[in-house]
Image 1 (cartoon, rainbow, N blue to C red):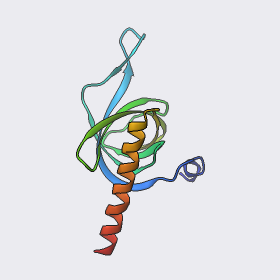
Image 2 (cartoon, rainbow, N blue to C red):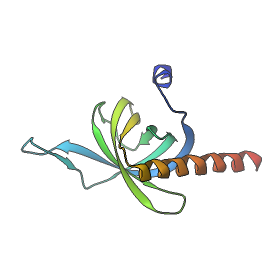
Image 3 (spheres, rainbow, N blue to C red):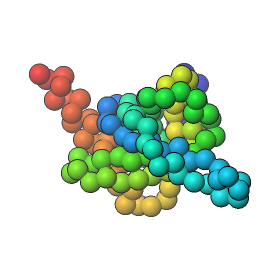
Image 4 (cartoon, one colour):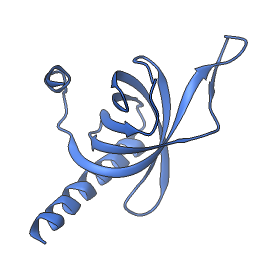
Length: 125
């Protein structure tokens, strides 16, 4: 996995946030994509403004596949972001966020900051 680390432009913060993962698949007609309505449980194990490392409760998510991820902010608000799987090994994968919305970027910065504070508190206890 060292090769994944070398390509990152932004530092990732360690986190263990629960997320809901909804795979996006081609429609039966093949002309559009559909978000699956059954979420898969997962955790974001690290996160930055451009991507995340995920641990997902299912196997078989292929690189280049698209996902809809639902995160909670420290304030308890859910927000959604779309991501592309860059690499996948068993139940772990790395994703790149597909977004340009400044509000979403701000939310990821809040999650990263909250994760850093949680890690600092657990080290001091």
